[in-house]
Length: 210
Image (cartoon, rainbow, N blue to C red):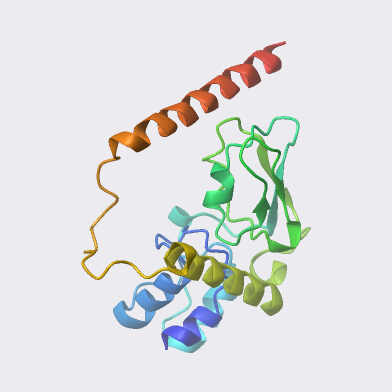
């Protein structure tokens, strides 16, 4: 059931439903009977799809999660990009390419318009543009786009779970509940990165004021 529900979601991985990704929302619907009207990218048609699978009644989209809208694509103003890589880390489908202190750009066909890159950008150089005209919800998507987004997200998750350099973790290593305190040796590079971002923000503000 969870797999059927997941296949009916648009795979934007936007978290607007209140869950970390589409798979977690699908599992919650299947196992806990959470409402099927929490996905703005799927819109009314998406709710109808989920209703046909789950038997839950069709209901209006929950406005607390957002509104049905056109499919969007993110664009980076390359004149303002400082190469901080924060947007690359936030993108669930690896649709942003670039390197540290180098200009970034969005690979348009891979962008789901999830908006997760926008709040992390320290210089506000990312904007969303309409990519589907007046079409909204599933009318703005396709099964092919959803399948591509899902494949890219799952590939990213697998990559992040793999040990570095293909090495297995030590047998004595114990999983932890969180990242824990930052070691002393890692504090200086982190401080330097934060300082560099702060300086870049200050330069950007000065240029805009000019």
